[in-house]
Length: 412
Image (cartoon, rainbow, N blue to C red; front, side):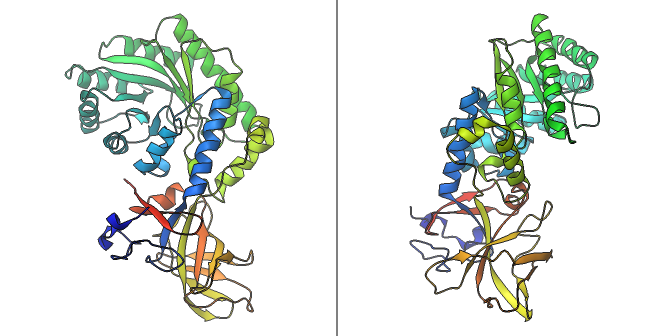
């Protein structure tokens, strides 16, 4: 695919060639540092997670906050995703403007202007939108606003645990909230939402299963009381670490036929070589169905940059820093080494370690006799892809020969 439509070098950090018919990363056709995703790995991850969800007969509504790249949202939809999940109203607007029509905002809708923006999107007539509530105050605020619009807002009651994040903590709060929603014709109770990722500890899996059992019981109780104002009732949970436990619990509980079980992992599409790689290893250790699927998730994101200086033996300064790459969940890991003019990139040594990161520089230590020179290119993988993506307006998509096949814009 030609990428000549992206010739404007002002688009980013990263995209500098204005005449190239075909850009190649190793041919230095692009300015570095540059965030890169591998097309083949994205396609692998799309298929793997959709197959996993299908095997449990749960719907997939991946969290888009990881990438905020609408082109990737659309790929997830084309691969079978039932909806996309987002966290803020501007994120919702960006997804809708790029063609996503079923959106879960896994957050409370608070504030006049946020409500106004959502109402304008719903007014188009083709947006199926859901948001969360966990307090009578928020329900009343939403009712006052939406009663004036002639629109109906779909609500999911959020349930959580003591010490967790947002969400009702007990049965009384849930029932009070459902009763309040029923008082307002402009509001429709359409389901239950949870985020199990706030539960930690050595026995986290058991605690999560017990929590989900309580949530399903609460959902059934509301069903019995006819509290839901919808033919289809959404029951949704699962971040990127415990999606297998949530899927397994939903699938092995006899749910009412009106209930649609939905999982919302987000980081699977990009994956990483840090916290989500560790989380996926745990999934494969405890879930046979994941093991039975062909292949596994692959880390799809790298930041490519240059060796800028070698001021001392065994110590290189890399032209990449906090402005370019995530560092909150571990420092970047050197993956590939390429010397311009050579035929191919080679695996980086495991002895090459990033020891410190500054705004625009990273410190790399290596054995004194290793062959590293100023001007060499090194590709780094990361942990927690969310905080690499949000540093880039444009992400280069490459094939396995490092040809740039597309440029995806982000909407942070």
